[in-house]
Length: 84
Image (cartoon, rainbow, N blue to C red; front, side):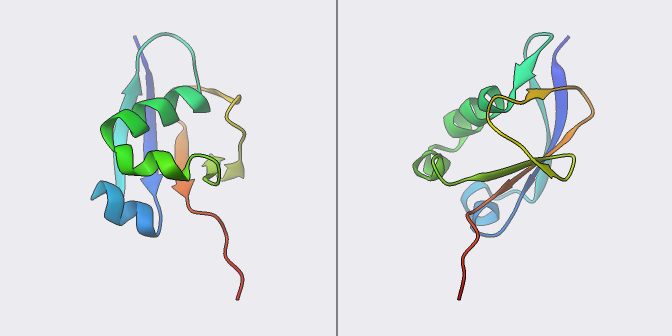
């Protein structure tokens, strides 16, 4: 049984993926944010150049790539904040 997540895409990442939100399942009993990102980059290679600057939130709290994920969580993928 895998780790089932709700993934939300914001701003230009909606354009890159063609998705606003989707259900995603990672294989195995445990997973980290980095595992999800690897899977997303495999599906949408145009996301990969943003790897160093992506903002990730898990259940509305900013998260690191090492954070463990659990089924039922919501993961938001956002571009870097820009000032103006």
